[in-house]
Length: 422
Image 1 (cartoon, rainbow, N blue to C red):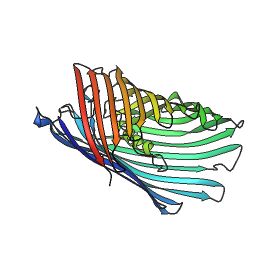
Image 2: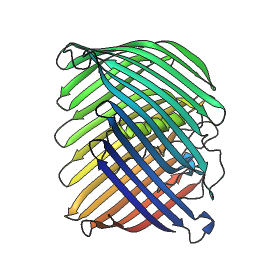
Image 3: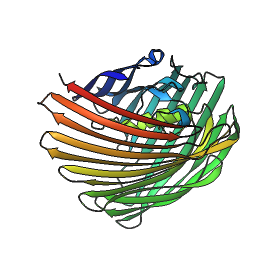
Image 4: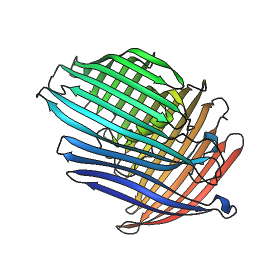
C-alpha cells in the first residue's frame, strides 16, 4: 500500500480573533486491491470572534474524520482495511455574552447549534452508520464570582433539544443553585440543588430534584482534588477530579464522571472539551475527539467514564502513561458494554534537530454488548523526525498492531514523509 498525504496548520491570535485549524488530505493506494483505494482527510478547527470587546463573542468548531464504526473492525493505524467506516462531520456554531450585573455579579448567556453528519464510505463493509443529528443548546450562568472571600454562589440553567435522523429525539432541561463555601484557605465545601426534566424516544422520562454535595481541597499552588456525591439522571452517583503536581517535572491527573447522553451529543461535547468553554486554544497538535476503542452506537446510553494519567517532562524528553475505562448502559437495546485502554508514549530530542518518539497502546473490550465480539488490540509505534531547516522536516515511522476478535489480524506499516511549512 502507498499513502500520499498533504496537510496544513493555521494559527491566528489577534485582539478580535482567535483561530486554530489543522487539516490534511490522504490518498491510500492498495497494490493488490485497488477497489479499496480511497481519498480521505481530516479537519479540526476552532474560531472565536470578539464582536463587541469583552461582551459579545461568536464561536465555531468543526471536525471531520473517517471513523471505524465497530471495535472489532478498527485499524490501529487509522488506514482503511475494508471494514465498516463512515466519514463524520461534527460541527458547532454559537455565541455567548459576558456582562456584569449591577456591579454585584457576572453573567454568561450562551446559545449554540451543533450537528453530527455521518456518511458510509465507499469500499468499506456495509453497516448502519450513525444517524444525522442536530442539537440546539442554551445555557445561562449568574455568579458573584470572586467578590466574596467566604462564599461564591451561582445560578445555572441549561436546555438541550436533539433530533436525530432515525426519528428519535432527546430533550433535557435543568436549573441549579450552587454555593461554594470557604471552610479553610485550602478546603472548600460545594453544594448544589435544583430540578431536571429529561425525556427521549428510547427512554422513560426522568424528572425531579437533583442535588450534589462535595469538597475541593487545594493541595498546593498547582494541585487540587475534588469529589462529590450527586443525585442526577434519576440515580445516585459520584464524581471526582485530581490534578497533582508532584514536582516541577512530574504530574498526576485522574477523573471520574457519569452522564446520560447519545453518541452524537458525546461527540459534540468532546469537541467542546478540546477547545474549552471559553474558546481557549490548545497548542498543536490538537487531539481528535473520537475514542477509537468504542463502537459508535446510535442510541442513548448512561455512561461511566474514568481516566488517569502520569506525565514526566524535562527539557529534552517526556514520558506519559494514561488509562481509560468506560462503561455504557445502552437504553433501547437493554444491554451494556465495557471498554478499557492503556497508552504509553515517550519522546526525546536525541540531537538538536532529531526527535525520537515511541508509543504503545492496549485497548480491550472487557464486556461486549449483545451482538458484538469482544476485542483486544495491541499497538506499538516508533518514529524519527529530522528537521532539515526551519520549514522542512523528514519523518520515518513504523507501526505494528494486532487485533484479536473473531479472527486475529496483524498490521505492519512503514512510512516516510517530507513536510514543508509555508
